[in-house]
Image (cartoon, rainbow, N blue to C red; front, side, top):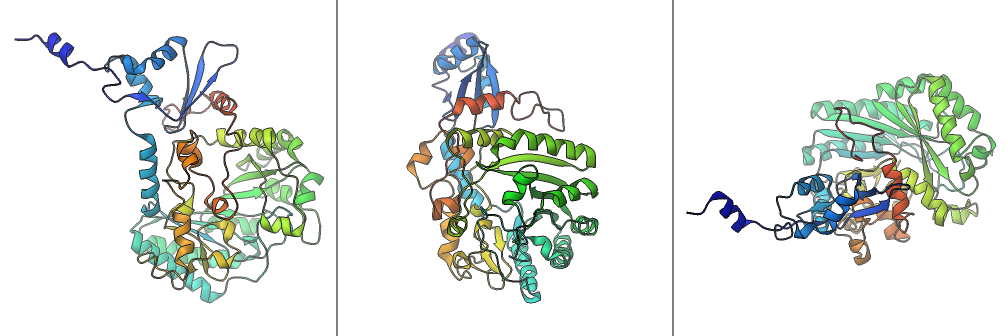
Length: 456
């Protein structure tokens, strides 16, 4: 009778025979002034440093015994795996189209705006949402809750400038919150506003409307901001926006978006420091993030396109932005890939992308008629619905499917893919700089339960 040791020896397999292989989504960079190597795994959302010995073991992984202790360590961090990660991403992409963890409504109470920003992708105009359309929005939300059986609702107030219609925000919020309560669904809300019309009365109303966060754009300090973020009559806006953020008691967190372009990129660090000081002085929760400006059809037609970033400039800004939100890979890019996320303009037209809310010709239906329980039959233009959903994984682009960045970009913005061109990450050809930016964050943050953050 064979001993237990002999049986184990006879059945022992290599890691390769057991199905283990190096992840196809590893990015690698030598840590400066060190023998350590940093590896970021985009599928697992993990970045860590490895010794020369560990790197050697990784290079001979498939020859190791499947019970080698390094296997568990590597697998936990995602740099090796025993599954087809791309196939898993594609499954996640298909599932995301139908999955309904929450319904998402991006509501534009008006498409009008008090600003005239040269890079804006919208063609502003029209009035405010009528009472009839507001009733349609409530009816649509109820149909979506019934069909999805979800236990969550998220509302994003958008425009135009939504604070030109605070009465509509207040009225619709009251009705939507009540509807969510009736369906035992958690209700969350956010707003994208230029911040010019904020007042304590408005802030208190937004708190009652359960708005938890606001995005406010500041394009630089003083005159730099005013050059692109000005009133329709050309008037300045910087001082008033900053005064609102500093002097009001804001019951929600504020994310300061810096639209970075050739005219203001030199102020990136200064503006970040300014925002930090503003948060300290005001006692409000205010954070900063940069975003490179991209072109838009409307801005080009108006002849006021600001200088776009390109090459190393866009790469630097993109790395700052993406390193700050490094996460587990996903199979979908945004709500455009979900049946349960819609944009609603002031006339009740439905869109799959908020960059299209001012373009009724791309609408797939109306809040009055569309029913997600029978999404294609009730869509007035079903092709405008399916074309967005069909850009989800599996991405209809062989180059994207083979790309190491796929878990992070998931094929890029669906709207730009459909109506402009594929938008790759700006630092696609500079993976080492991105990995080192992630590595620099190791140990900086801990999750609430005191476990290592995803970058550890």
